[in-house]
Image 1 (cartoon, rainbow, N blue to C red):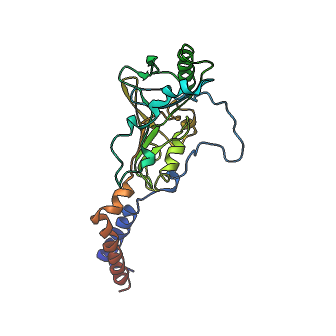
Image 2 (cartoon, rainbow, N blue to C red; image 1 turned 45 degrees about the vertical axis):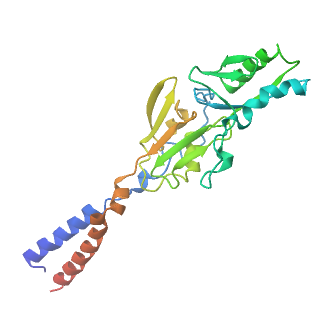
Image 3 (cartoon, rainbow, N blue to C red; image 1 turned 30 degrees about the horizontal axis):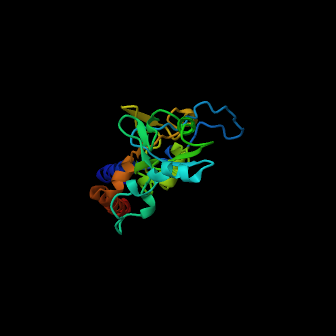
Length: 264
């Protein structure tokens, strides 16, 4: 039987240990927890968005026709005009984007043709628009076009934060997080922030990685220069704060003392 003061001291230690045990709960870790476990769910994809061209995009445009010499002039914009200074040792030359810059008017400047407004068009629509204008100068022109500076940024509580180039015309939130090494175990999964600048406006959207509704979100498919910010949880702060690091040592010592006292 413990003496009354000792018993109070023992209960206090137990309470402190219980309160300090707050960390990452398993239920906050898995993704898409509202999907059924024992059955297959199918639904139509209704939210897939098409990548559209915006100001400051860089477009690689290749033109061919029955007259290769005449086509060559339209391919000059993909050469050194946008390369800038010689890359230093800290810059990967492969990341230097060459192409036609979409200016503040939403247009590119093609040789002979002049200004071609492309802002807001899909890659396919832009290709057809350029091809239609080249008919005046070339016989049976064929245009190949792609966005060469498509990239997304992933910041916050992920394994490898950074800016990631996208080589296709489609990228999703899950793909971007995968390129960043996935969310850390301490990340807040139901409050991932997406920041998007489009058509002169900045949008902020909150995404819940634990809900299947993310897959139907209008923000699930990313646009050029989208930013994803993953908020760190309290456990992340606790792991780096010295007072939290030391509390486990203190509590362990107090537990030993309480155990010794309880035996007398």
